[in-house]
Image (cartoon, rainbow, N blue to C red):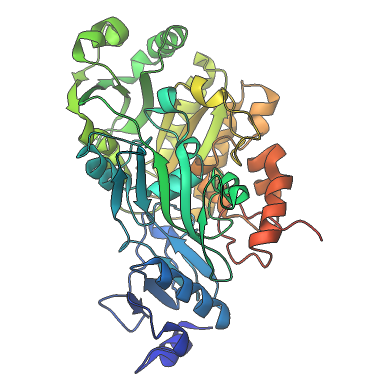
Length: 469
């Protein structure tokens, strides 16, 4: 149905299916409430209707309405996907931003996170109680999308993937039913949302296992000139042999916002005090950064380290590049290719992640829907500030191929961490990418899809095809 047709349908009064909807229902003619802006300009789609639920019953009503009207459905949490997975051209978007309550059950040590909660908001609210959940480095990312899609971050070394810490959920299924999911109720669905993303319904609230964090952490922030690249690659390889689970480092290629010249940034989070920083990370200071802004930082600021880069306006494409060999020759070629890419996309970045995966790799491959239990590392490629999307996609694929080129064949052919490859997740003409993303767990996910969403109502992110009857 076209946006104008929905405008006419909703003109004057709500249809019967939305009469009891407590939140806001907005169409394009409602300039105040109609919100379709996304993290990436190229992810914006002209929805026929955007609804903003305030409770689980609202979500159920929205799904029933969308299906009755034949509207394609999208779920918007943190609005951080840059391929349009949280948008719907001519369809209905369930925008969860008004549901962002965070509750803490101190006795059970479980945090309850509503579907519109961002990482930063969750960290702040939980830290008031002296507790935390595994999160990433960017505060505007939605917790639900992060966790249901796997979830890596600075505490992965100690607590595993975010999805490994999910203990329960309140969900709304494709038929509008509201269900409670835990180890004794719909335990098959609990397995599915631990890595299976949005394939089975709208997650209104997640229950996540809590841990007690330090009051503060050490934030490493070094900026180097490009001539230090060989020394940094050598030192990072040496560090990886002795690193501890408390250490997470990110190595970035960016153009300086001050003068537009290329710089290398080594940043990271150490779950330790300043007294440990010299012993563990002094090696990097001895390489001669031109700027050193490292400092002890309050824990509740930890999820905002990447915000300045993440919140840059404009067009964006993200894709992950798995690698298990970090050799200087390949890194130098990747740097040269990235630098050429900045001519057409000046805000582009490459971010090599060095997180500790020991804890997550202990979880059996079939224990959750997330099969990404490899020790492979991931580089996040961000092509940003482009005008030609097709050309930008080509640049991202060339960089992905280059970064993975010296790694093993299985690594080169894998998707890696699904949440980083937005474009691959949104390409659902076939289920080829879903099969690659979920690997040996795909067959079981197909059974769940047939049971909970046989008509593929939820089809925006690595859409699983239902098993044949």
